Length: 133
Figure (cartoon, rainbow, N blue to C red):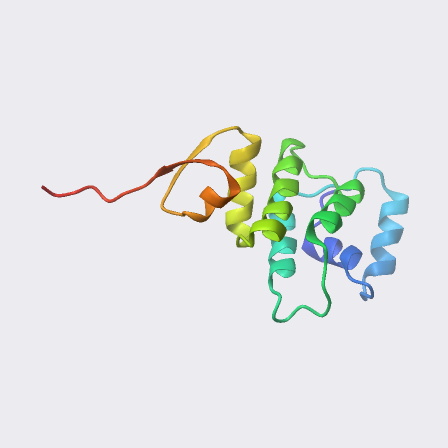
């Protein structure tokens, strides 16, 4: 059964109005899963330091969440784990962290203007405007 972001946030928060229902669903079902999109939304919540109610260790929280709610397809789990680390260690934005995670897992080069990827150690080809000479 596919679940979305409210399911994940109920597990992350210390107290959430859906927490009991989520725990019950996890106990009763063995087919709970989600997508990289739901985890992207959770990473956005972790990133918003200004309005966060409390500090969350993103890599640890994501690792714990993945044990309870896996991602389909499975290969996206490694990308989300990498993204959580990039968010925490390099202060990338959640979406840049996810792009970096996907590039890292895919062992690819990224064509972009975004120089933050250099700090992460990605193989980056600079995207430059075509000159009109």
